[in-house]
Length: 425
Image (cartoon, rainbow, N blue to C red; front, side, top):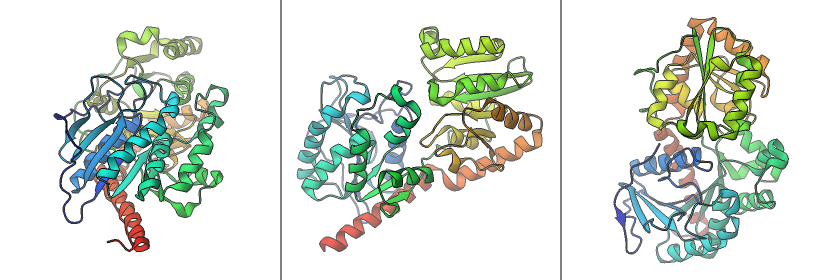
């Protein structure tokens, strides 16, 4: 999803009039701009989530301003993303691309800018995304008495558990995440597994609500063009960042147990730069050692508009990540009517209904992955039934309109509670 920005704006911040029943909402997303081109190391699901949530809230009549760090010197102060949604570029640190794990020193400056803006024109509420956004927002709302809701998108405890010494997060991340969870008015978690993890961090369940991520049910649809097939009878597809934790090596090892089947891996750098990518080179080596190099194809990163045809061209979509804070790919596959075989971790425990819409398997287990995929490949009727059930499940639970309505309900609870305490209506 690469939103087309509207006109550049200058002058004082004026998000527009707020009508009766409408809220003025500040979404804070320090590294993940809704204007970013997806596919980079730090540009992915959070960018899509913030852009889509902002738009869906605007569709419900709210006025939304997204505050994100200025990461290029030629960016204007504000961009009109669409009617009802402004993007406000915050000057915090040098105006250049900086890895998100190196942004913590600039969060006090970020927070001071938020406080200056909100002191002049306070929003009805603030909803921060990712822990550093929460930290910057917390300092601003404490000064101004604004309600704060927070969505983590990923937790440092989980990342450290799985990546260990490869984790490049700041050492204080987990302690600061706990501070945000205890200091905000409500945590909006994206899945039940996150609630349990927060509880182990000391954030009580009573401070949390679950609202899942969403999917564009108009873009990801079962009917439409399907990508052409190779010489193999069956096709598996894996979509997402090409990094070790996404489990592509597990898919390749499983492929060795699945004859007459090809694996298409979608993601990573553009096709022209695949040969230079260390993880792609490693995975190609894994495929050669497994004897399946001729049945594995890397497409590179693609625009989101090209993804539905690839999903529709697959017999099964595999999502074998070691861990997954939420995982949008199962929803995109289900919206396209494709069965999903996913590792039983994180948000995938909520999204994939086993056996109705696919199968859940242990992470890092190629044999279990191959067995579940093989059962579906051998049963066309089961694949069709899973695909139809997946589409129904997405429409019932995960369209952005439903996600925005659920988010709005949490907003109203928090605003009403604050008004009851302060006596301000």
